Length: 149
Image 1 (tube, one colour):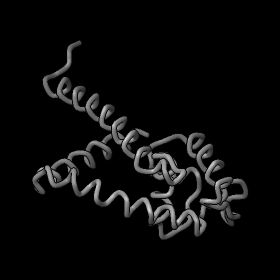
Image 2: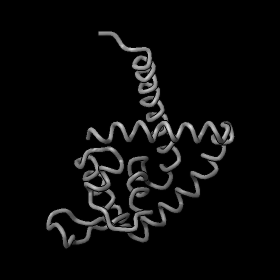
Image 3: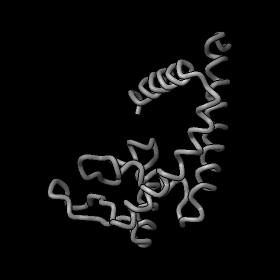
């Protein structure tokens, strides 16, 4: 069986997204390293900070599209570093609720301020309509794939 024209193009796009993901991780690691963070830790902070309700490790894994085990490893490290704390979950004995400490919230705010000029400089190279279309397309692709997980 051969790829359809659209299937071949989507395959190329997926490969480009893989490359983009790697580049974003490298950039995030560079932005965060002087503050003792990594891209992965920064993403966990970013999942927890804006949440209106406490999240579990599984909740964060689902938000980030990663395994629960990968997030658990990060949570263990981040708890040791004093960035977050685990609290009892009244709905589940073993699935603790994650909460940012003041240090974790400060780290998240610091990284947000550091990210703003970086992202604004890149965004200035795009037309607003192109960015909106890109986001729409990525959200649609995520939705199609998220149904299967």
